[in-house]
Length: 140
Image (cartoon, rainbow, N blue to C red; front, side):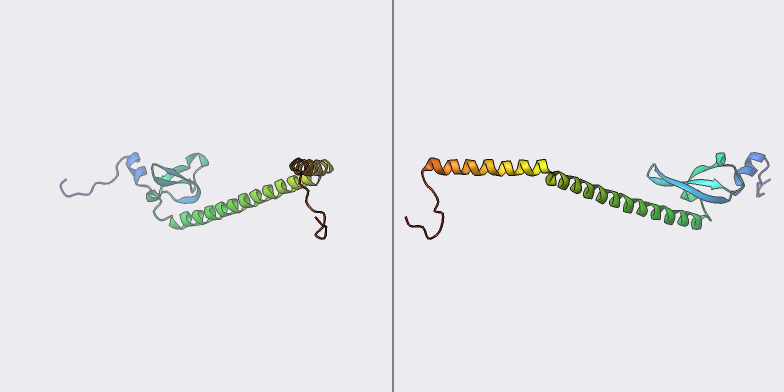
C-alpha cells in the first residue's frame, strides 16, 4: 500500500478528527504561562465544558475577542466600583472623625487642653519673673 492515503478506520480516530463548534467562552485563566479559555461546546451539556488554549480555538477568534471585551468591561467596572467604595469609606471615616471633633465632650476636652497649656505658659513666665506688657502704650 505504498503511497496510499490512510483514513480513519476506528471510531476513536474518527472522533479525533471531528471538529467541535464553540458556543461560548465562559471564563479564562492563566496556566503554565499561557491563557486558557473555559469553552462551552455547541450541542453538548455543561459537563462537557473544557479549558482550552487559544491554539485549540481556531475559527473562534470572534467569540474569544467578544469574551475579552466583556471581561475587560467587567474588570473596568469592578475597578470603578472599588475606587468608589474606597472613596465612600474615606469620606465616612472623615465624617466620623469630624463628628468626634464636633462632640461637646471633645470640645470641652480641647478647651481644657488649651487652658492647661495656657496655665503652664503663664506659670513659666511667672517663674522667670518677667511679664509681657499688656499694651504697647504701657510705660516701663
